[in-house]
Image 1 (tube, rainbow, N blue to C red):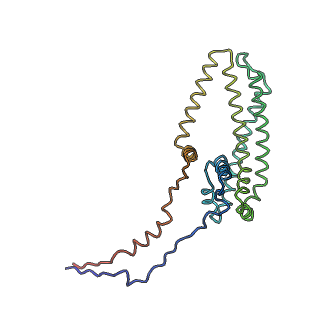
Image 2 (cartoon, rainbow, N blue to C red):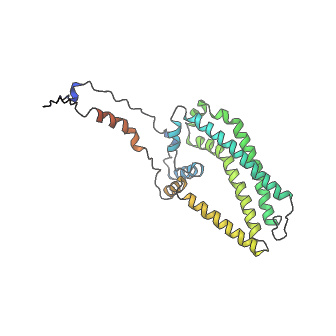
Image 3 (tube, rainbow, N blue to C red):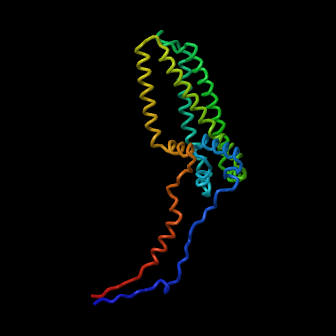
Amino acid sequence: MSESISCPLSSHKPEKLHTKRYKSLPVHWQPPPSLFPRLVFHMICFLLTFHSNLDFMWEVFKDPKGWKNFHIQYLAQLNQLSTVQGLVLTTVAVFITTSPPLQEINYSADGPYLLLSESLVFSLFGLLFQLYTSVVGQSYQKKKTFKALKRNRWLFLCHIMILSIPIYLFGISLLLLIFAISITGFLSSSTSAQGFTGATFALLFACLFISILPSPFYSRLHGFLWGKRDWDDDDSDNDSDVDILHEKGAGTISTGNP
């Protein structure tokens, strides 16, 4: 025989549901209501952050330590970028200050030399901006800076633009160096040099295209072009704690004696 003791939910004191409520996105960070300013806002957001809005930024900064941790991580990555920027600068300087070992591969011609010179200029300015951002980066971590930037969407985008300038300068200097090398190879009088240059860049572009497809950049670009908002994989996480508490109190307690 077995007896079951049923304990109804009403006999227990109701448990308080402690749900953590975060502040919603500030009104000043939302897209402008007018058509043209809203279009400009979405374009600037995508160029600076590869997102069509500032929702994902608020998900990071609404945490009490999110603003400071974001800038600490940014400065750490900026130091690594400075090392790579120095390598690009050194490589360009070597090309500019040395003569080509082969006449068939003449990177001192007008076109390649102009690109190398521009790459040198962008590399120098990139290092200067990286140094400037590293020096003033400590002041960016202060909470009062975040409070001031939170009051205006355009002011916050200007701050993100300042953080993005060293990255874009590095990208431009690297692309100019790559274009100079490619033009040197394609304009070479040697057929084998042209063939190797074409095969090399075809392989590199194929690898780059394959690496972009599974990356978040492709999905964000697709969503931006087709007017779809960024999907949040954790949309249901806010209600998970509530569901667990309801499931814990929904059953009955049974004991059996043989």
